[in-house]
Image (cartoon, rainbow, N blue to C red):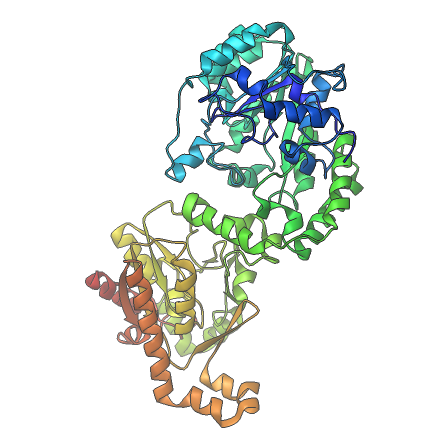
Length: 618
């Protein structure tokens, strides 16, 4: 790369929360020096800084400039900002010891109210708290030294950047706004998640002219709240309403400062349309880290989804010229093959939803279904119908269907049974959560337990509140996460517990074993449940002869499978120190009650009896 000229080494000052001195935000923080051990003059006039200036003067980027070189794969970098603030600067005539700061970016500490999914403890006190890492708060010991240096060069200062953490939460910025020149530009990058109506720094900014607002968010609505964890979308909209009159009067200006990453790669149109509706531009920035959120590093299928979204966006002709240029550059770079970090991305989402933001459990799958079709984020295996019913509500399902119901109504004896059970004038609602279970959402909002089993646990042909699981939940004032599967096998229950006990931490687990003739086969992340008779009449028996016949039909083999599954469930719960309650499908037959609406499954009486058995065990 030739002609790599940049004003920052001579005209910029950046100090990060650790006290590392740089001349721009993107510079390597480990190269120049730290204010906890050196003075600001020693660092800015030191040998490494001189070496960097010599390299830039020759039009060559130094290793210090790596992040800008990477960012310019997509067309823009931090050096554009510095060169625009000091357009008259000529590096060919500047000395190796010269430093006249025109652009100031001092980040006093990492105090922040959010733990955004692609941020980390180095930039957010909220992340540090989640990871149990101590952080320093309050004014740094070098605060006065920095202020003295700024006062000494006050006449050079043209722009002050307020960054964080969240700059609107840093009291040092409250004082800083009182001492900088009144006519200098103040720019800030804010997450827009602070209440503007009560914030002291906002009040001072609103009283100034020449303030530029970089509104740091990359998605809208629920996806915004998922990525910018801790933020409230309605608060952001309220804050935008506060800024709009100032921006329309030209006293202030600003736009959305968005990072292009996997969370918005398939949602560019909705963000751009929102920006246009608010009269905002979008300043796009390429992702620095983590690499596993880069759309071009998640395999060819993800790259194709990203390219398709870019093409759709550009065809709509709603982009401003700078936005269009950014995405044209992305297209030219994303074509190149890169390493595949899907495994790292899967770990990232699992950590977000289970370790750091458990209140978001299951939401990635709901909010980005197009990505989950390509990347099996939770290594999830679903019974075929689960993907079809997820998030939906039905009046009839499976054996409990209008045709069978009408057939029973036409039979006087069966009609009488339906009437006695109240089904002639009752409806049943099958409401499925985002994961495809007839259950409450897995949001951790209340204390809960987990139940696994077949249609007896699922509650085929009965009301939700008639299920034994819901009777137990109401009695104990808990929520039940019901993982019952229609036609499920013991294999199914073990698989579900293997998947979900890592993501959930229930007070206890109810394991309902089921008919030993059933077993589950997994292929391409889809589970198919078989019964002995259906298997023997199918291709499995025909293709494999007596081996599979004996495996599937000999009673002792059924007993072995049942025992293995029972021991697996016990061990899973024991390892996680979770209380286990075991019940059997046979328990539902003790009351001779098959008064569910399909006149086949256990009815309300049987479920009440099983609920009492569970409560007794507890």
